[in-house]
View (tube, rainbow, N blue to C red):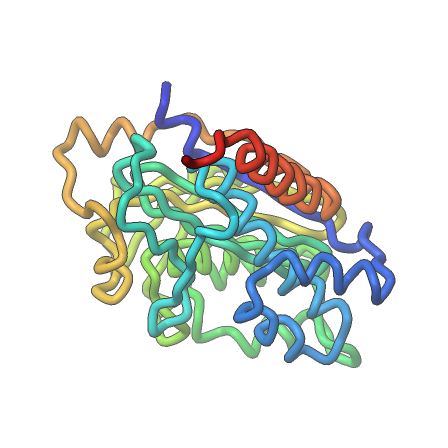
Length: 294
């Protein structure tokens, strides 16, 4: 099915990329100059790596899925900070192509959908230095429902409590990011139910949202990633204005909602750079092969 080509789940393990200053600068130089400050403003190399790979993934995915030349891709952000593609003449066959990115710990992830809203969140099961799992988790108590809180604190060991906490957290974040909301969203109203972390459903203010789907994956040692898929009409107003289509009849929407959720594709930074270089070479060759004008 053509729509399935718009469903992507890409992940990069940045812990395996140890660039020299020269190699980092080369990768950065692929991006438009206006993107550079959002990366170089970070002091720590790990933060710069996450920001750079996040940008590279966005350009690479849009180019690969939609066929837009790298130098014609334009991104903007909503007032809440959600990135979106600016494209007035999108002839992809996708009614509502959109994407979302996330990074935490060793991984950077991107997900896309052709019809539904998509949210992705990745978490590393970490706590601040000189803190305990219990104390760290307790500081987030206002963001969880009483049911979720009970499940977290009855999970068993400190490690298991932390794992359950972060799984709930990344599901909540994926939902909020899918609709384009910011940090002010009332997360304790968003309650997740599951069967051993499968068949995940969400209730908002006690009401089950039956037109949403969620998935949770383990990406590596002490990391999880969640995917949210939901109706475009649920987007907050500022994000909804960036979407091509927000209203679908039941049949149209159900096709998008029930598309197969593809497995995670693990890429390297070299994969992203090579894709960019191949595109540049192909563009140069195409220009060279053009007949001379008379």
